[in-house]
Image 1 (cartoon, rainbow, N blue to C red):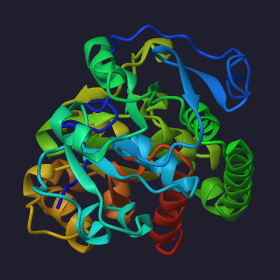
Image 2: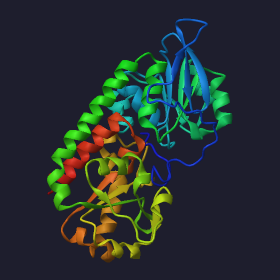
Image 3: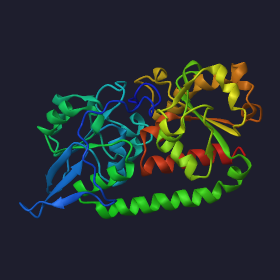
Image 4: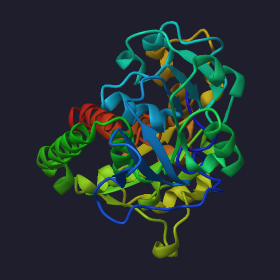
Length: 348
């Protein structure tokens, strides 16, 4: 089974190299225009420039969960997918058991075209795509190579709403994108009311991430949906002292001993990503246990971790990093909200 993610936090570790020229739409509306050459063609602005798309793309390749998620949210099925780690071998003959969180939305077998950031050109050629979706940090040379195969859109991981609009415009589903965004905002608004009592009694959240205790990071506003949704619910993220809040990196590395300075945290959420435990023979039902079990055991056995007030009162929660960092759009928001409700509200 193929389990996504880049090595280190899929947020701190997940985005790193930018090499494409950014040309970002200036308005909240999708940056798409009808080409004067044909009423059935439109020029889509994206992170690598502009791409003309004609007709209705039907054979779409999604490179990475960040592009697969908005595609599926728009009720469009891909013909091929590339995940972030080369664990699953062969095509996705049973997506619901091979692709975590998103596989159950894929209705038929699809091709495996390798690893998201270094996809197999040969495999992509075989599926004869009419649209390729990727993340801009894959690089200019990669973009040029894929653009020679089919119209290719480069998206920015940090702009989930804009990505949804861009993809929706490319496949003539702009109305659906607006509906999804409105629905997601309503979900968050309702959830904020649901969490209000817990936020009032436990306002301070320490958001940690790592694959093991000796390599912990503290996440603040830099962790995309993982942190922004918590803030939208009303929680206040605990920030290490003496940190320039206007110049935060993607996660602040701290030592295990430094955990003792966070005793003011009412709740601790640990985003775990020990992907070395994943095997191609696993299925999605064992995904969470595989990436979190070692971390949970290590936390329970560590004296420093257990000395935290949040540990003493049983308010430390483990969530796969993949859930919020790998799925920054509407589907991820829905799933992350459900996970937070299940773990935080039912236990409080």
